[in-house]
Amino acid sequence: MAELAPLTPTERLLRACRGEPVDRPPVWLMRQAGRYLPEYRRVREGISFLDMCRDVDRAVEVSLQPLDLVGTEAVILFSDIFVPVPGMGVDLDFAPGPVIADPIRTRAQVERLGVPDPRESVPYVFEIIRRLRAELASRDVPLLGFAGAPFTLAAYLVEGGGSRHFGALKRLMVREPDVLRELQARLTDLVVRYLNAQIEAGAQVVQLFDTWAGLLAEEDYREWVLPVHREIAAKLDRSQAPLILYVNDGAHVVDAMLESGADVLSLDWRVDLADAARRVGDRASLQGNLDPCLLAAPPAEIARRVRAMAAAAAPARGHILNLGHGCLPETPVEGVRAFTEAARALGDSR
Ligand code: CP3
Image 1 (cartoon, rainbow, N blue to C red):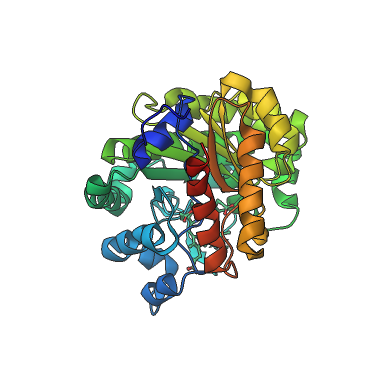
Image 2 (tube, rainbow, N blue to C red; image 1 turned 90 degrees about the horizontal axis):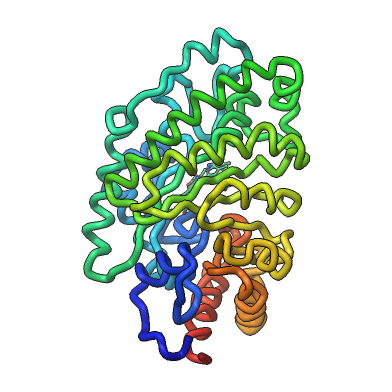
């Protein structure tokens, strides 16, 4: 790899996604713009979270903050997986997670859900993307778009909010499978339109977040989640933007994730990266997977873990350094900085 000229951050990320040679792994962090940054909290003051997602100036500002404050090498659109959902006719708020006034549990409720054209229902999202691309052009830093996966969106919509076991969702799954199937079908249409519109507006990579799919045993995951991921992967304009698939707590479904056809599998920290890398080989790249809590460690320990992750992921065709889940409000800023610095240091040793 030493013969490869230094890459721009955009080239490095796109090549890592597609499994082409890189000088070193690229680095960014899930939830890199968020409450752990005092600068984020200042911009967030006196405005609700949803209003902030709609405020193009503030959303652009906080999206860019992590670049200079903590040294990440990609920007993720500041928004939330629930931003396109009110356009379906769902009454939704954040406190701080999503709260659904009238949980969706019947066929009649599902049939009332529309699938809007996101370019009309949430035009500001695409305005933010266009502005970010313009801001990032001179630095050649890549922009990621994202969406929530239908299963995770459905989990909150059925439950009415977050939950430990998502019992209402699982009851619907076994008692009225057709209702859940129709809900997922409508959410799938929304997600495909939403991500393709983000790609059209300038997102160079897109990530699908399926935070709660790991709650299912592999057999149920294969029935309820895998076909949805495959459909989304097939319908996205991936000649323009590779797809990263994130499943939290998904060590038991890595092989099934691979069958989705996603370009990159984003793994949580419970997955053995070396084992996953051997299993995916040249069929996918990997992203991850430090436990976000471990950013509280001393910088030398963070650097050791970064080197260990890069070595463990080597058998996979590509690797993007990231966390196993998002930064937490209590994440130390110095820990995030140590993480991105350790990634850059990997280039020096080659
Ligand atoms: O990664 C990024 O920096 C981009 C922005 C982003 C947010 N949410 C901002 C946010 C992304 C990619 C998400 C994804 C998201 N949102 C997921 C999937 C990934 C995951 O974390 O599992 C889920 C399940 C949600 C739903 C959601 N939004 C929850 C459960 C919460 C509350 C928990 C929390 O961390 O506060 C939110 C709110 C939210 N989304 C915040 C941010 C920065 C905090 C809002 C605030 O400022 O009060």
